[in-house]
Length: 226
Ligand code: DC
Image (tube, rainbow, N blue to C red; front, top):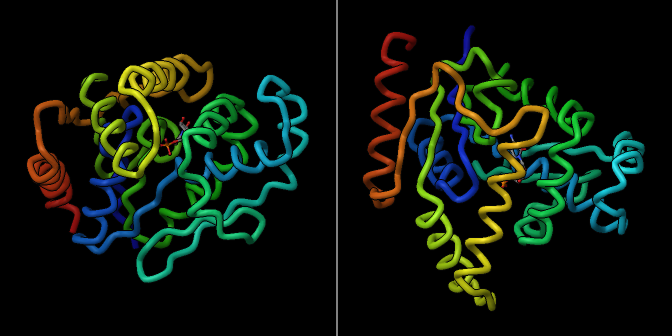
């Protein structure tokens, strides 16, 4: 049996995970958040106090970094050497480590098989940066989800403030700009749309409108498959 796979790529803060989670729940697909896997690697390197410039050491640590994914009541949990780190990886600091580690080809290769295997036994919605281009080049549906830097920074800023973090909009904007630059300019598997991806821009759309747009794209592309 062939499973349906939906790849959602795009820059940080475009709403990929919010959309993908909800779409997966409604369509009965398994949601796979690949950023969480990079974050688990970043957390390990951060805890060990390894310098992000020290690529040799990061690569040497890889055999001891076992990342796995599990589901509890339909929610994805990420395990780092069997420890559930799902709640620990959502900080800006871990995001910085994840971004640097994700530029190392050996780190990407380390996570690739796990990501590819997830689609072999389930209908999936997978989000990340290189899903449509590298991880699942034959995905049934490929969506490249974007929004302007200003809008993404504002959404992230509002989220952080709601969490009680003490940040400024300018700081959030600069960090997001830097993250975009890193993700788009790395040599291996950079953030870019697959040739056959459908572009969706949510700059001027609210959550409900964005959701409706993505659902329409998926329904349209999968109507002949089911
Ligand atoms: O989506 P996120 O912010 O949780 O991702 C964390 C970092 O991991 C981000 O800086 C880019 C990287 N990443 C990647 O390189 N490839 C993916 N498929 C997913 C995330």
